[in-house]
Amino acid sequence: MTSTTRKSLAIAAASVLLVAAVYFIAVRTGTGQRFEDAVWRGAGHTAMQRPAQATRALNLIGTWTSVAAVAVVLLIGLLRRQIAPAIAGVAVIGASVGTTEFLKRTVVRPDLDPNGYVAGNSFPSGHTTIAMAVMFALILVAPFRLRGLIALCAAAAATEIGALTIIARWHRPSDTLGADLIVLCYASLAVLGLAAFRHVRPRAPRTLASRAARSVLTHGPIAAGTAVTVCGAVLCGALTYYHRVHYSPGYEISHYALYAGCLIALAGSGLVTLALLWLLAGVELTSDRM
Image (cartoon, rainbow, N blue to C red; front, side, top):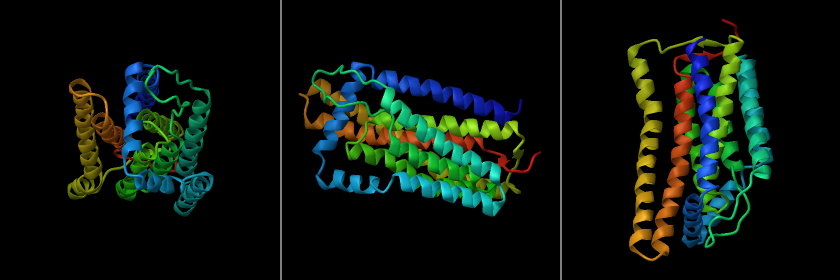
């Protein structure tokens, strides 16, 4: 069993377990629902133009956007004569979106918070799924030397989608985390399938200098941004709890909860992106058999 195969299996298994954990903690417990209700209230307390702006941006993502993304992934594969990675990328998009829509229609959200909002299930987020699946498909089909740059550019846009769904009051933080993990699971399974058919080969930067530049200029900003958002989410979450304990529920709680929720969405997307880059470190996906 190769290193890529072992890592793919580990990431896929961890993703499934984490999806279940996020669902049961955030959706099936009163504590989780109270926090996400506070995020919901916080989005309602923001200036009116912010949810409207977020909604306009999210409306750009839909069926035609997904079709166009699939066409771009296939076109890149054809131009590079790398059909296997392109098919794997398209499969990630299709399987991720299909699973998200199935779960959204079958998963139950019980009403455990008597003071919360009675709203139907929104787990997981379809918009976050599309954005992250497209980004991961582009990473899979990209040439090795450009993978980091494409990941950096795509992550700047894709990771923002989850936070926008929260600001627009379309989704809760757990919805975005569930979507991220679903996409990561299918991306790791796609790499596992490519490895099984010997479409994965070792590859490394030619020189130590190019390897360092690759890490600093591409992977470094993603890792740094993710670390900052994780710390920010912990801080805002702590402030949410502090105000709940020392003050009466109100603006302060939902204000910090909204920031915590958005940062959780950004951090989740960043972490799964780093997981995929770690999985693909030192290997190239190709249609040529080893």
